[in-house]
Length: 379
Ligand SMILES: [Fe+2]
Image (tube, rainbow, N blue to C red; front, side):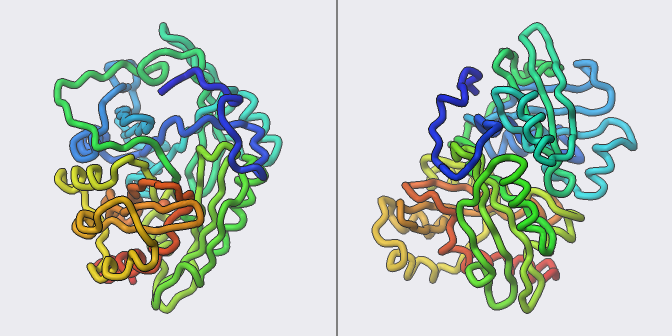
């Protein structure tokens, strides 16, 4: 990842966002997991992430290990505890494997901390400097929904593999990348009647603005419903849709998440590709499981979205969904949960002009999720 971008290099695309931080992009996403070594193997083998850094007993860390993997601009950190007790164990005990840190890349972590704390953020980590022979990094952090946190990372004076305290992780075992480019958006699930509270948090504390609003009439099937609003920073590099459950005839998928995650948390990470057909073919070949819609979806989809560049056949074979807005269209597909609990999953998205989130697919998609819920006995 380039470390020499300044806030002035990034065009403002969401004029109503205040953007006082400002954010340069997602720095990394850290998951607390039960077995980081095996999770790292999964993301490397199935998803094509490349190993870049490691911290653990060999680097002087006594209580936990972290494996860092990268694919283009996406960085995942997988952390497991080495001892009983402690915060990581508590997190895993409560939530299962899941996202703890959504780290945001900033030009000035001290200023980001002051600006957000001043506006009401709860402190997670005061500005802290860490150094090694490759330079220095400044961190700070604030709490967001559930037990999830944002860590601000200022790395303009750092040139090492990842962060101070990590060693480069060179592994002879190689896997080919699957074409994943960057994190397009990350979605948070929050509890009943909490969506507006957290959207206000991102507006007031982080200077974000709301992009789109869906209500439960947009996002409901016969049985289940949810509400969602999308918050974005000024340059559009950070987009956080926030979902809350809505009343339906049966249990909302958001409620199922909240029950199993034991609170609010990250629901899905949407990763962008330039060629969704190639990416999804490769992921399926490597055993990643996706939600599928009935093939009748494809009988009428082009009537709804109009002409597209791709042939319909491979999209139908792979189960890739299509939607259009005023600016263009998008192709997307969702994995099944990638953890034991029915909590977090991934979305693969290819944008061809469209800047929206696939509203036209919600009904078909949620019916697919409900079929899975039915099998789990949680509908
Ligand atoms: Fe999404």
